[in-house]
Every structure is written in structure tokens, then in C-alpha cells.
Length: 102
Length: 464
Image (cartoon, rainbow over the protein chains, first blue to last red):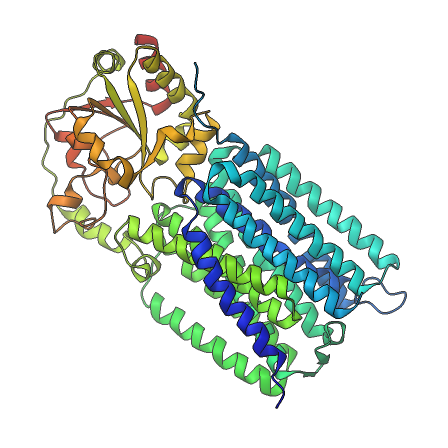
């Protein structure tokens, strides 16, 4: 009997939860705010769904009832991707070690 | 592009996201980690374009919308003050949630574009995944909007409770399950819209009873939800990158919520089911006796610190409100010039989101190796000469260790009272968020400095 591809995706999902569990516990508490902003940015990978939705219009029709939602989602996800990664970068740039000689 | 190659590339971008989080284990590797995240995102987006392979006029619009959203995001990222990070993160969560809802709607209207069947005849598994993604996304959206409004001060931070609240929430949750079941059997679009509307309502209802200082838990929880929403959509789209990311973000938010709850010694359900708001009234009824406090001015504080050999600074949300982090850093610079050892003690729930204080201190150029977590520094208070509490309150209250009747009993607190002397910067004697008096105010070795945190810190620096 063939295995439903859903099972493979479920396996990836479950294993990723475990990976996430161990990786996140190793994040130093002082970086918890950047952790939130970067997880925010990466969860916006939902933009792949938005792009597929936006390009789903049949020939010649760019804005159909379904693709409009895709375009709206693209804007939202793009705000998040750029905003999330850049603000994380900005925060991380501020974390400095003590200067040895001063 | 063949489906297999794109699947592998999505996997690569998923792995890069894992590395992005892995990088955050230390500040040195964190910047590289962020770069991994960006590369992962670029790969995911590029692969999507190539696999859809539709470079007609629609593609141009996609780029335009991408640029619009991107420039808004970049603008916000550069302009936002660091003190406003909690609001920003809450706002961003709401966008992820809403994006998930939109993608689910689009997939429901036009399932053929996603290979999920035809309208009215969508594959059962996809329909369930879609419903879950949309529901969780909608809850994330409305919940985050409320959290944002509360953090921004547009909406009062006080918990809003009413009779039968929990019953109503429970009924609505059951309703969602019922709607999903019916949706699967009838494929009716009306049910789908009702499902989304009810989910919006739930998100709204579960966040309004939660008070301001519980926001660290709420933000972490919504972070987690936004991950699960993304994972739900990932299953619908059969996209590995989205599934991996959803799981990562979901567990990350869950862990942060757990850490925050532990920092307050409260169970997750206790926080979610309405917080300290309910206990507030009973305590407010008790008559408070007047106890003597010692108050001083900047001169006294400067004198105490000048004669100290080690000072521990305990920042809290009040420091963020007063924007006092830069003034504080100047004061510390002056202290260091006088050969006084200075370190910072951070309680896990200080501020309005996990790690909030660390970011503010980093912004003020405080080196991160002078900043310590509760467990690392708590034993040092006994050997320190002066503790300088600026904008923190409940997290220093010794009652948590001594009075089993107290609502915060058992919460880990900073052992500030063990210092030789305590300087407590505060506007007034009013109790903190938990609604209880802080015993520390009345201790023999405590000197209260009644003033705005920033102004007081600047005055002390002048007097040093």
C-alpha cells in the first residue's frame, strides 16, 4: 500500500516541532526580543501562498475575486518580512561586548 | 521548475530558518543567523515565482505589491523607537494572522490554483487544513490587534471582564469545531465566512481580559499562534518551508510563554483566564495602614553610590516608559570612572515582552556582558552595596518569599533587600501591577526617590 504524502508532511511537522523546541531553548534570554521579531519575519514565508493565490487569475484577468486576497496577503507579508528582518538586524547590531581598554 | 527540485529548495529554506534561530544562541552568531533567515526567505520567494512560472502582467503587480509592503515594512523598521518593540511585534503578528486568513480565503474560492480540487468539491483533508489555518489566523489577527491597542495605550491596559466570559469563549470554541464539521460535509462558503467571523470574535474575547503586565505571556502566545496558522496553511499548500517554519515559530512562542509564566509563578491558564484583575478587588478592599518610608533626593542617592564599591541596577517597565535608559547609562559611566563595579539584573518578566529590558540597555550601549539574568545574579545582592531599582516593582517584592497569602507568593523575585542599601526610583508609593504593596518600600535600608526615572537619574549624575 502506498503511503499518503500527508504522512510525510506530518512527519516533517512533528520533527520540526522538536527541532524548534531544542533550538529555542538554546537561545540566550537576552535575545528573546530579537527571537520574537525574527520568528515573525520567517513566519511570513506564508507569502509563498499569497504569491500562488495572486498569480492564479486566468489569462488576461489579473484581479479576480481570489487573486485580490492574494495581493492583499502579499502586502501584509511583505511588510512583515522587510520590517521583521530589518528591525532584527537593527537590534542585533546594538548588542556589543565590553571594550577591553577604556 | 520541476516539483521535486522546488520541494528540495523549500526544504533548504526551511533549514536556513532553523539556522537563523540557532544563531540567536549568542549575540556573536546572531547577526549571521539573521542573514541565514534572509537568504532562506529569498530562496522561498524565488522558487515560488519559478514554479508558478506565470510571468504575465500579474507578475508585475506582484512585484509592485511586494515593493509597497516592503517599503512600508522597512520604513517602520528604521523609524520605530526601541521602547515600542512590544507594540511592533504585536502589530506584526496581526499581519501574519491576517495574511493566513487571506491565503485560506483565496484557496477556498479558487482551489484549482493550489491543486486542491474545484470550488464546492475541495479535497476533505485540504478543507480541514484550510479551516484550521483560517481560524487560527483570524484568532491571531484580532488577538494581536487588541494586544497592540493595549500596549500602545489606545485601549486601557486594565483587564476587561464580564460574567460568563469563560463560558462564552468555550461555547464559541465548540461552535468553531461544529462549523468545521459542517463545512466539510456541505462545502458551503457561507459556513466558511461564519467560521472566520467567529474566530475573529474569539481572538478579541480571549485577549481583552488580560491585563497590561501579563502582556509578555500574551505576545509570546500570539507568536505561537501565528506559527500554527502558518503551519496550517503550509499543510494546505503542501509546502515544506511553510510547515517547518510554522512548527519552529509555534514551538518558539510556546516556550517563551512557558518561560514568562514561570517568571510569574503562574500557570498558563491562570494568565489566560483573566489575570490578576479578579483578585484586585478583594485586595483593594483592605484598609492600608500608613507605614513610614524614608525618602531622599538625588544628592543623597549620589552620596550613597559614591561610597559604594559595587552597584546593581534593576530596571523595569518604568524605565522604558520614562525613556531613561540613556540617562542611566551616563550615570553608570560616571560610576565606573570612580572605580565602582556596576552590573544589571534583569527579571524574566521585566517590561512588556521577553527580553525587552535587554534590548533597551543594548540600545543605550550597555555591553551585554554586564547584564545578568535573575539566576545568574541573585546571589550577588548580598555582597553589593547599593541596589538601584528603576521602574521595577513587583519583581523586587520580598513578600513573594515570605507571605503565602500574597497573590505573588512563590514568584521568583530579585533579592534586592539583601543589599546594604536600596535606592528605589518611583513616582509614588502606589502599588504595582499585582495590586499589592511592596514591603521593600518600608525597609530600614531603603531610600525612596520620588521622581520621574529619567530626571532623577540625570540629577544623580550631576551630583556624582
